[in-house]
Length: 218
Image 1 (cartoon, rainbow, N blue to C red):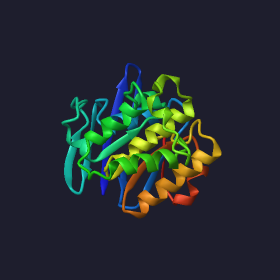
Image 2 (image 1 turned 120 degrees about the vertical axis):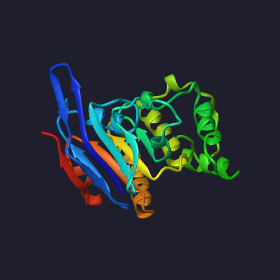
Image 3 (image 1 turned 90 degrees about the vertical axis):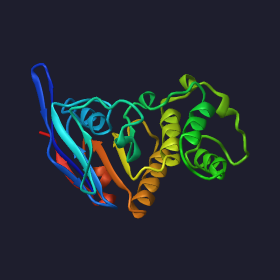
Image 4 (image 1 turned 135 degrees about the horizontal axis):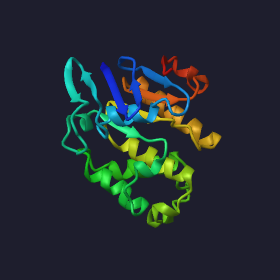
C-alpha cells in the first residue's frame, strides 16, 4: 500500500492542499479536477521532482519520501518504487534518439538478457514498429516524432522499468483510439499483477472500467 499524506504546496498567492490518498495493490486512484487545480503538481511532488511545504509518502508502513526535501536525483528511494509519465512526453524523454532512450532504461534496470526481446515486443505493441521488422524508427531523433509517438515511446520505457507504482498524469491526452486501448490493456495487466496506479484526469469517464477510488480537487 502507498499512502500520500498531508501534501501542501504554496505558489505566492496560490495555496494547494491535497486530500490524503491511499492505494492498495491492484487499485487505481484517480485524481480529478479542472485545469489549474494542481494535478500535475501533485504528480511531480510525489514522484520526487518538486518539493512541497508539507507532506510525506509512506509505502508498506515505511516513510519513503519527505516531500519537503529536494530529491531530484536517482539515488532517492522514491525512484525505486515510482515511475512518472507526464502529460507532455518531453518531460520523460531524454533522447536524443529512440534507440538511446530505450538503451538508457535497459542499462539502468537489473533484468535478464531477454530485455532486447521485451524492447521489440513493446515497440510492436505500442505501434512504433510493424511486424515486418522495420527498425528505422530507432535511429530517428525524438524531436522529430509526433506527439502520439512520443507518448508511445514513453509507454515503452514505462513497461521496461520494474516499478510497483505508476503515476500517470492525463495519460490519454493526445492518443488515438488504438493507442488509448493499448494503454488501457497495459494498465489492466499491471493492476492484475498487483501494481498500483495513480492517474489524473478532468473526468472519470475513461476510468470506469478500473473501478477507481476517486479524489476530487475543488
